[in-house]
Length: 364
Image (cartoon, rainbow, N blue to C red; front, side, top):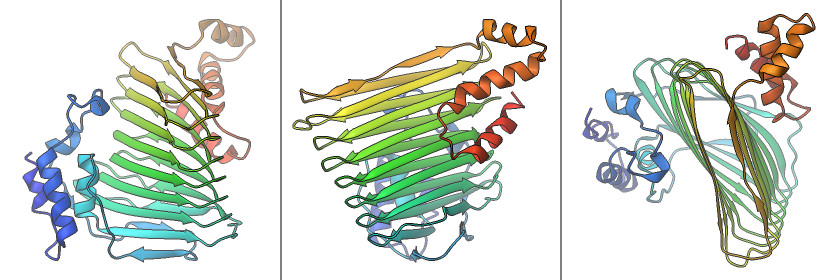
């Protein structure tokens, strides 16, 4: 498939910003493995088919307060080809704005509705929490088969704002998510990514800690089987002193599934007293499963505390034997060990998600 196909999908009313974004995409072309950020991932599914743009309503919200539709938005050139493609073809957008001091009592549930086969959907989401506001947002994807979903998210947290963002993917589709978070002083961003079922998944999550005492905690669980491909690229920019960050992802892969984890921390000059932790652990249940993990630290300042680590291994035969010797069936023992391994990422409020993970692990 030639990339010019997508230029034909531009709406008739396309403004200069959309046209410029499309030209940038056409100039850049599809990401290739010559790019370091795409060394282990190729968007082959997007190149092999001509996906027609789907204009049907996409977002469904559990509440309408603090939410408005976006009819147009200013976009800047991106260094990512697929972000430029989203800028050119986006069909629906929504803005969530929580006023200063307001605290959402119930989580805001956002559902991306199912997409028809061989259809592509390009969406935008803006999230703004004003000073000392707090909220929990849960993003779910309905099951779509042989479809492509592109979502660009922009999140802005003002001073003292707190956001818990949960994303759950359990759909046999191709997903590209680009999420950029900007944090002011004393703000807190906590994310939990549950990639439990997909065909092809790529997420770029970029955090900018722009003022003192901003902090973020990024956690995730990925489960892959068959030929599923899961790629998490995280980058945290410590731009100010006294900021903290944590990355903690765990995964289980079987059959011919493949996962990629790239966690990067950049500590800018002058960002003293930075605290940054990274950890990625994976279990491979078959010889054909594969994980490419790459934790990175880029430090331009002294007086910091930064650490990173990654492990890849098999299920413990000793622990499995111990449980079986206590009268537990091999299947049940295996599921118990796998569940205990990944659930270390979850907190006490995630009991419903733990049940979903248990159900998925029954098929491993």
